[in-house]
Length: 82
Image 1: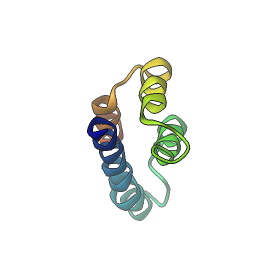
Image 2: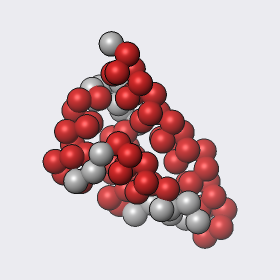
Image 3: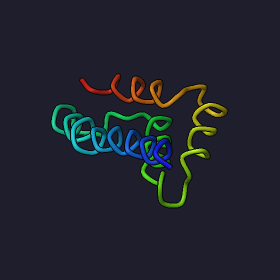
Image 4: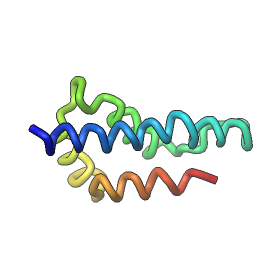
């Protein structure tokens, strides 16, 4: 199912940027993880997509609990790139 694998890849790309750029840069500049608890909660869930959380479940949680789409999630996380 290409759509599902593309969604997983999109989530993976966002989490990779958070893990490799946003968090390390925040730690380097401010001495702490720049993600507030809500963002960290979403990030931890995103790390599980394709493993024990299906793309459909993640999409539903983003929509129902956080009022966002995958693009909204990407934009939200990019706000913490100082």
